Length: 162
Ligand SMILES: [Zn+2]
Image 1: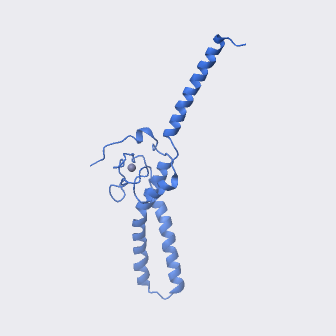
Image 2: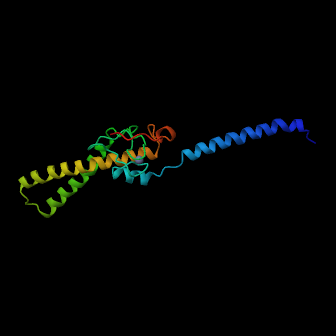
Image 3: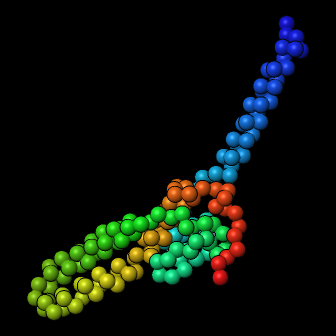
């Protein structure tokens, strides 16, 4: 048989536990799962990975401090030299393959044509891929909550920069 006096600490303990659980579950809700692929696709379109509307870049490769639409802070990103590295990898494979195919099917192609086409193609493709790759990488960092891309403080609405 249990006395009411014995029950009180147990109930308090239970109340404390459920309170803690409620807190942790609400914390869990605020840090809901961020899907990587949609975030990467939004980044590759050079829009905010959170809302998919605000522009990610203020110029060619300059990332906005925060999204002009939803206020998601974007300055946390640490893309660093990964985008050029990936761009070189992609463009190198495309141009290298094209050179080999050309050599195979048109072995007598004049050297001046090679000298004109491949550097130009490499330059154009690199400039085209670089912001796409950088955007995708930042989107992925956002989805993984890397480098300060957490919830709460970063999700607080902020006046758009003019
Ligand atoms: Zn946004």
